[in-house]
Image (tube, rainbow, N blue to C red; front, side, top):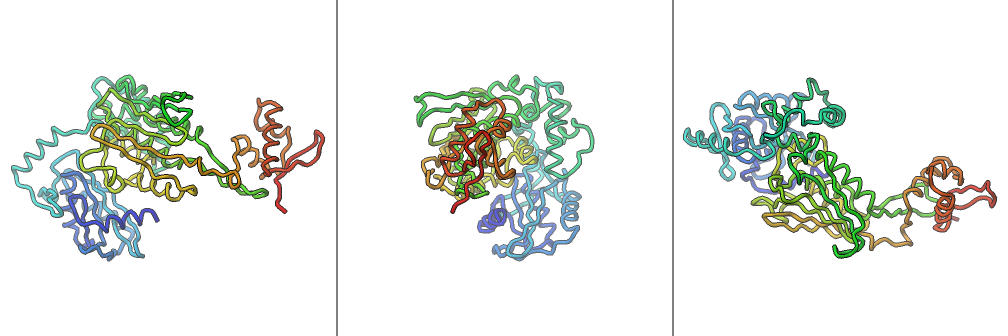
Length: 463
């Protein structure tokens, strides 16, 4: 499984400033010290059931194990820390994976002491260091956590929160939201002191571009392989980030080629897009999630060419993240936005998004070239490549969307007539009906029965 592979990659690493192994749950105090240290730095992961020598030992997990561990951490940390705790099975043994994020409120105490991470060790902080840490955290607040001073609660699109976001949140979390929508947004750090934060406006604002004029996605589609070739279309996707992602993704999916692997007479058909659909959505989401919104001079730019799609994002990779290690390292310029998008599965957690992009490329039946990442301290450009040049007419049958739906109708009803076709697609001309059906006959997908107006079409069964 993908999660198991991802965890084994962690185990193959050495303990570090962001990674700790604990052999047993009996080491709760050591786990608590590490959580304090991670909370006071950039966060980190603890794998329980793994020895210092990276051997998978496993732990005994009962019905209340996770609850008791979470309660122990909550009871002994100040401010209270609620790490994400998951159980995974590796080599038929259960391990516990604890994900601790950097705390917005520092210093974080564990049993009346404060710890910091130095290399792969936890060290107790002195009183003077505690005062220094408290001062630093006051000065450091992520941009998306800051209050949007010009906005007020009337700038939130409350109908979207109630009718779209909350049902989606409940569906993904399998939990019922109790309380008012404003209480939920407060708990998500989208409202502080009855004022929307920057994240609150971008995710739930009625008109985010009123406050951040470049907070949108611009997409250009070209006829050839270069920008100096004729431009076929230009779109701007505005509104909140959810709408930008959904609408931009729908547009790209609509305008990529899809070939159908379909042998004559077969009921099942495999549709093969020229690009991986997960990769497209994940790269759109990454671009709007991790861009530098403090730079008002640039928007997210996507360019579609006949042989590739380019995703340009203003805001370079942070220190320590490179195109080579982006798959394994984790960082978010806008952690509140990233966390909320992850809660409703708009973006992958645990840094798994790039893992899945790479996997999708490897699993694609036409083996596209891997994504190309170019980055500097100012911007990131990700390019994915088309597989259209590998489409072969002998193997793949090119169908338009009407023909695809018509074949689904034939599979269900057994046959289709010209009249049926017009009913499925009202507004098309008789010539279009005839051309679509004739094309399916020519390609050996359907056969025509009868020569009069009562003729109908069935799947062609190979001899």
